[in-house]
Length: 456
Figure (tube, rainbow, N blue to C red):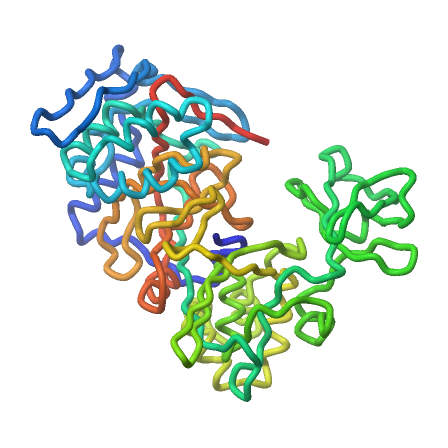
């Protein structure tokens, strides 16, 4: 998952007027779908193909909301029902791959209200273009998403790094990858205290957990913690009679965790390790060929700060050079700047080893499929839902219109029309993901009868 993916570290890719098809596609998205506003009745269901590509009895399809229905549940978001055919290049989608990605998510969705029938139908639908297209058109209603009155949003990219290192410390593998520290404590914070500057008492409830309790033995000054409107937990440690914020990245890089946390492995390159923190997961590859899959376990709860923006402001690089590749190249040439630059981002991620061999696990709890999954803001988009994204390819600038699955989240992914597109695994995916920051448009597909929600 990408807990800290931040667009300021990625190069902007702009649309061009030379590609006529792309221009037409995004003109339609910018103006809205006029036909959807004028139509008075829902589109007809598309019949299942008779070529034997669907097996088993059909599950109930549900009753779709009427075309043009608009819902404004809160948070500045609006959702409007449109036709499937109104989505850019809908009929030319790789529906079989989209269905394959959706099936992965059904391992978690199938027991949730409203998803049982669509997941049961997906399980008996073969990964065949016509059958998959029919499945998405019969069982889902597309809702175009707007945020604060605008259909346009931002699409960034992320990937799962393949990082060189070792399971033991060597002369080359010197930078530790930490699991959750022994003294790290997470305390649930009620929404009523998010704006409070008061002092509360904390009681330990386990090795890495605690609660706010008037009878607690430690005091916590809430004004000292990095609390935002979305903070749900205090992350700290006990120090004498106080509960204080956990160490920052600069403190940890300076040795604050020495002997206090399990070490899962060692990275050869501290910048690659830093970017694994941004991505939220990765794979450590040893000289012997052993691979250790690492997933997000927790974080110190400090907000992400863009080192790319910092480097541009200091004049170390231009903003256009602050891609992942540009930052790595600069640090190789200027190692004396390493502690200064990396220390600007106080946020720090802790990992755990993954047993899964099918790929990185997203916030939904299922493996992510490269180019058919993405991270969203779950306050606005239902985790696990199909999501149609219309944007531009960060390298070719040609239209990139894709039916992906909203199977991941990230702390920097905020807003209704905001997607972090998952490009896959390894350096090749990283080259593309590091350049992704494009204007985009989003349609959320929900099971017929289900409507979008805003979850504060």
